[in-house]
Length: 241
Image 1: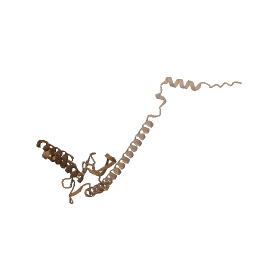
Image 2: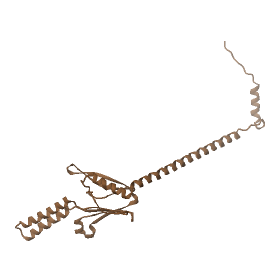
Image 3: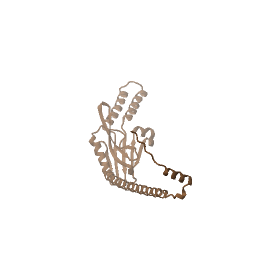
């Protein structure tokens, strides 16, 4: 694998590293040689010759690529990505090392992301996706190496962490939870229907009890007399020829 090399591999640890490429070393060595040549063939004072060499050396170190390492440790349950630059080590000593860590239990997927760089070239990098929403790159630098190299790295990480088994187990667990939720919803609906039926039965029974037979003795005498008079009145029909 050209993208990264396997520095250490066991049942509990997978350590991937990337060192400066041959192109980076060639540019740095060429810049240093240019500074030395300018100082050697120059007729300037010694102070200027030293300035030529030191400037070329500083630029060469700045162009040097970083040393990157990504370690998966099942014992500690952590994944740690480290980046170290030669310039940072010389200037800041121990502070030149940058690191990012994440929990292996939250790691859910390994993806390959692409980005366009100048001259129409596409660069790729392997990215670790976590359930919390954040992501960590196996390397900070996207490289123009073949995509197949990056795919090999992604497959190797997935097999080491057994992400496919974890994903299938999560799917089974999720299915069980959905079935339990559906059965609970059905039980709640049945209980609501039973409660509505009981409520309707109670209301109908209450309505039947409210309509009781009214005795004639309970009606006021004035209303009874008016009713009797209306009953005795003859009903006339008019016919028009």
